[in-house]
Length: 391
Ligand SMILES: [Zn+2]
Image 1 (cartoon, rainbow, N blue to C red):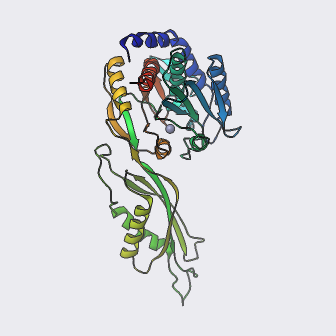
Image 2 (tube, helix red, strand yellow):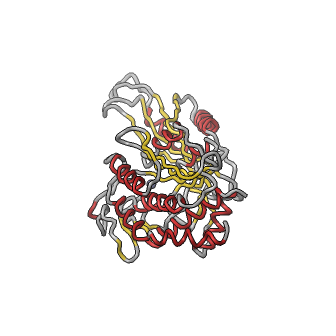
Image 3 (cartoon, rainbow, N blue to C red):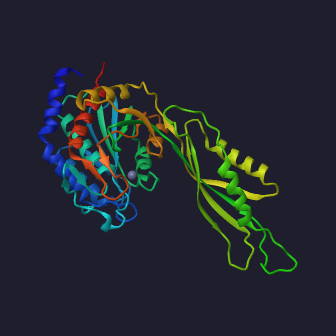
């Protein structure tokens, strides 16, 4: 970027400071809790603002749970996707909040409310970065992709956007935190394992039956000691993780249970495959518990991914952060699964987190630092401008 461009972008966004903050508050005041409200209303609020700002966009997916796609700039050159999700986690019990979770109240430089950090500030910053860039002669295209149903882990909105042909040369997801730039995330493999026994009367004098719950107790011991094979990666120093998270078994107090089922949540690392993990579990359980009848299956799988730390986009982010924030973020990877996995599988290098400073994500008193909202909009605009620039 020419030095000369730094000032106009920064200035143009700073001029809109109070409008950006008010819009972020408006988003927080529009509840979009996953499983409680749908995304229809928040999508309307965003659509109205995009219309006012003369940014072309359309709603995609179901009427009740739409996602939004907006575009500015020139077709046929590079494309930068800036993405944020529309839904939030539920507020939990209102009494535990110091400030109304749907107020967007600002106290001592912090803007409070459910979804403020995850990801409504990101939406506000993205829209105003786009608003600033639309007046510049962009070398390529900026695509805003706001997806529904992220918090369930189903990533329904993102799947729909990708199915409808969302494509880009890079993507930045506005998950909060400008102290770190997330260059990948662990994967998620959700599976279930069932043990089978033989049901008989618990008081039977002639038959013992086979207790599927007792068998499962042994399986859980095996899983607790299981060391999953993986390739170490310095950006995932925490390794993979296997958690037995639910258990279900037994029909009645006087029947020897013939079936017990557990759900296993596995957080994977790059290069670990679903097939290898399920095979390792199956083989280890079968070897250590002879004569066990069991089955294993999976119902969710998003692979882990990481982009190279020397990618052009990372260099731009570090460079601009140094200049604008006077600090360089740490390069890291997320422990949780993100929709970045879906984009990465489509060949789109994805940053799955770089945004506003925050506190209490997914908790009571979720809030963002107002100053970082403006800084983030300025940063996004510069990063996009730099990336799209032909060199
Ligand atoms: Zn979240």
